[in-house]
Image (tube, rainbow, N blue to C red):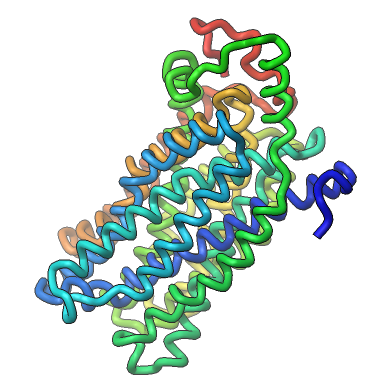
Length: 447
């Protein structure tokens, strides 16, 4: 593979974009495999002593445990990314994620080691969460900071397809493993998708090692050294002088942070355990919806370059609110075509519209010196506030109410919060990344 020094700027830009996108796909494949296994078999394997309904909630709660570590991963990775570089930090998060995922595939169950099985599962899940806490911010930044003028929304949208690409691959891997193992899926077939990640991780690590560092970071570092400026610790600087954009970043995610897992993880569990339909109904719905999501995210990223980040996001939020009840009505029928249509409607329309512009919008909120910290902390704080335990909360609400109406209310309320938050941001698509925040005083902290 050619060194970056021998490549043209366009070639370097494409390689770096590919690095961030592929890395995100592999990491979210690993994350999705866990989520799917938690929805399908972890209740039986790691919490067999509990009532079936409670064990299912406990298994989904272990999925949420990973979100507890995300803010810590965001703080640590944000500091490293703003001080030593985007590339090195992304390699570190990738390695942690890959090792913890492979170890889950080798983990003994409750039947073998008792209490220590769920304990070890939670520890490895925390490691996964820590890694993801720094992954999204780095992948978004190297895409946006390498983008040509006027195309930051489009370039930034590509790491966003990593989530649905990983979801698609992970769900397909679980489905393939189920077909291979048959009735033995609960005993050993569930391990196969985790072990498959070793091959994907090797490919992703090779690509990431050969990527280039962000030119924005290198230029800012050189500028500070030339002007003999003292490099402040990014996290204290972020919390002291950039609170408004940080709050916008946190609450702006509410439209998709928890809702994404409601329409993928929770729905997958709900149609299998509550509606008693075949497992492949939910898996098919998630795979079809993910494929459409992958196709539409770059489209809406391009749209955000044309009409603006805010308009694209607010249109997507409106779509989520208007389709929330119809989607759950479709799922409730228990018909395969309706379940597929419902999940696909959310992922291809509302979610894609609010998710596509986020990397560019978030990068444009913060100056280079705190950008990794700002977007990572903002993005991951929303995860722990809303996303992590949403599938378990939704399952508990369904048990309590006997219906899905409380879940629909959550979808609508969280989306309204996100739209309100983004409405306080200024349109940022025409800003120059290199000069964002440079003339600000600590008192102003303008967005």
